[in-house]
Length: 62
Image (cartoon, rainbow, N blue to C red; front, side, top):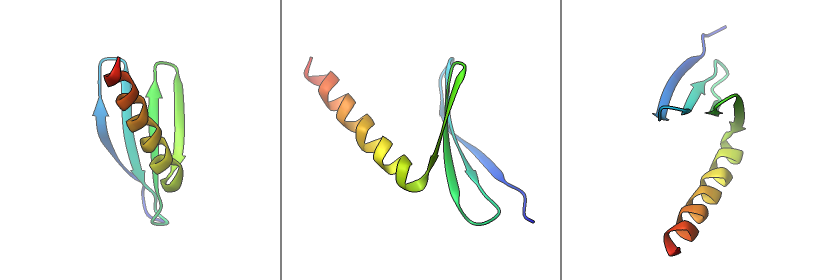
């Protein structure tokens, strides 16, 4: 069984986004937001990024 490789995507003082390359070839994405961690498979991550882009676009209008 291969080890899981993890890589930080971005981080701030309070938040962290990282990914894990699983031994089975799947990539999972993780958001650590203070004491909450969200886990995403690739399809879910893509949809979350779409949501985040829409949030930024809406916030930029204000």
